[in-house]
Amino acid sequence: MSNTAVPATSYGQFCPMARALELVWERWTLLVVRELLSGSTGFNQIRRGLPAIAKDTLSKRLRQLCASGLVEQHGADTATSYSLTEAGTALAPVLIELAKWSTAWDRRGLQPDHLDPDVLLWDIQRRINFENVPSERTVIEFSLTDRPLGDRSMWLIISNGTAELCTTDGGYDAEIVITTTTETLSRWWIGDLAWSTATRSGDIKVVALRGHRRSLPDWFLGYALL
Image (cartoon, rainbow, N blue to C red; front, side, top):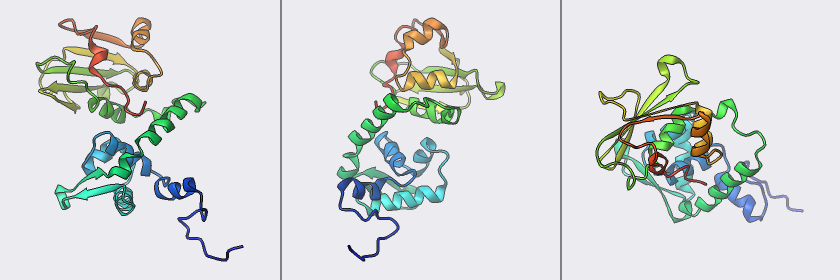
């Protein structure tokens, strides 16, 4: 039996899975990778997708990922950005399978503490299929009825191949208003509920001008890891 002391960060095993977990299984680490896979590059963009993470913790995780060769840092100070290396990008199938496993086997389903509308709508705005949206500026209002009345709506402004999530309408009239709950919108986004089923039942209500109602679901690419 070996008497070699095992570092606190090590499982002390030859097993490749154990060695992999030493690199990526600390709290928040894989979610930072998820954010980078989803297109975030800046510190604040990553935090937008992970609002519950402390700044110091995110800084530490990014340093660890860089030291492990999974992430590269570019620039410095306010111009700092991050990208996945080939090794980091190779984690994508792992995250996809983990998400599929959770969808199939997590018996808890969506719990109230999973339902953050800011995180959900941030993910939606970065998964726009710009080939299918109108060429002119289009404003979508998301009205989430489970939120307090004064904090119920957020607006997605799509224009010239960009999408911006806003807390005000920017002075524009919304061509589309989607009224639903955070849970229903979350279930649709992760593929647990079909758009057609939700609209037929009234769980998602859509008011759309210019005939956009039929094409609307095709404007979105869906959750990236499923």
